[in-house]
Image (cartoon, rainbow, N blue to C red; front, side, top):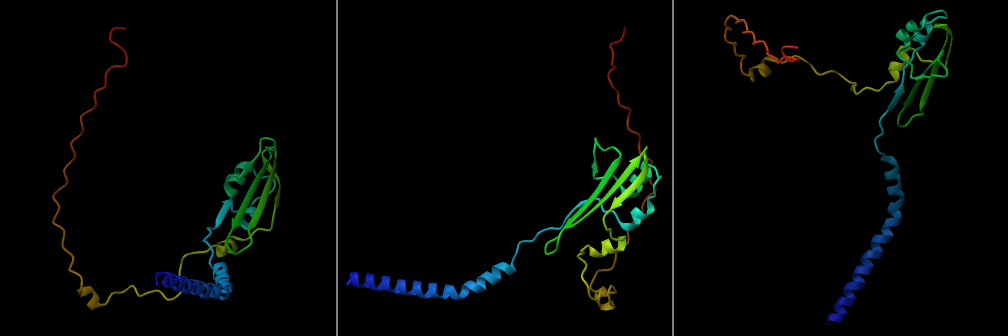
Length: 184
């Protein structure tokens, strides 16, 4: 009798496994779709100097190097071998969109701007509009409390009248040992 119950239990377990495995084939395409729809969160990667169209338009050949640094900021790349060239590079990588890369190169001759080479740059408003913000759209909640809501809170307590402020007592001057022995 124990032999037949073990045999029937094995048969039952095998049948259940086969039924469950046959269902996996039909769930495979659904599972693939679900796996493709779920992806890990990737942060936006912003590197370099943001240089806008207005900043480059302000610069003119003949301006000193210090003005260029005031307008554009410290260059991302400077080279010992190319002391008369500053490179401003900006990259932005976002999940679900193509990476953006922009380059501005300022050339100097005798510490004044000689020429500027730049990629197509956005205006400041165009760049700001591309930034994501956590601000939710929709109506703002009312910031006014009704009389019934105010009655739920205890009335404010009045602070006790403060006594006239006293002048702080000065701390005693610290005494330090002499730096050199006496008598030299």
